Image (cartoon, rainbow, N blue to C red; front, side, top):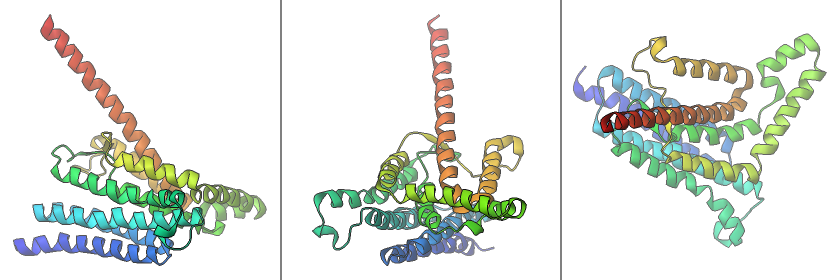
Amino acid sequence: MPKFSKIIIPNAITCLNLLSGAIAIVLAIQGDIRSAGILILIASVFDFFDGFVARKIGAMSEFGKQMDSLADVISFGMAPTAIMYESLRFAAKVYGNYFQQSFLNIIILGTAFLIIIFSALRLAKFNISTDQKFSFVGLPTPAFAILVASFPLISTLEPDSFVWFNVLSYFTGAEFPFKATMGLLGFQIMVIERLYFLIPVTIIFSWLLVSKIHMFSLKFQTYKFKDNTLRYRFLIASLVLIIFLQSLAVPIIIFTYVIISASTSRASRYRYLKAKRNMDNFIKN
């Protein structure tokens, strides 16, 4: 395959990522945050495959790297910002022009813009970094964007859309699983549509984007299980959760990803400091 053709293919996929994010922003502004969330998920699929295809056909380039980051600013920075803005506006019952609001409302709605600001900072740091080939320093922007995209999807879930609901209905009758499912959905929706959840999540995860916590990457250098034990276990567990919980699984998966990464990052740093102290003591003696 000619070199020019090789470069076009992954960059075309990147453009589909960019297009999905741009449409998501328009839909979110129009109030259709559920469809906007779906488009962010679609953009994340394109974001995975542009790099995957580029590596497979040997079309990695500096242009592709920069193009990918520019697309990510739109799809995983501005698009989730628009969704969060609409979510905060709904939760705070704010209507009308942004600049005609009270100071408190402006602060509440303005929290959403932390996403685009810290996403841009994260992507800029990533572009000049030389130590993020096998892992990430800070939370990847798609992870935060997917988390935000899941909120409106959770709000529109129906009990009979769950696999386990239908299984329980068959074996136990309709009343028990219906009440259990509605209770779970009611709790989730009550939480994700409230300011006391949306604002802290936005602030904490915006900070995680630029934090120094090492996050494990889902990029495979080899496909051997022993070389990717954590990745395979995480992906299998995530797949099972998605099958049974659908979009309800997304916050669980993202929170678990952060917790595991933070734990392994701390353990790795502890081993590094211990080895450094031992080496220093050896040199002194």
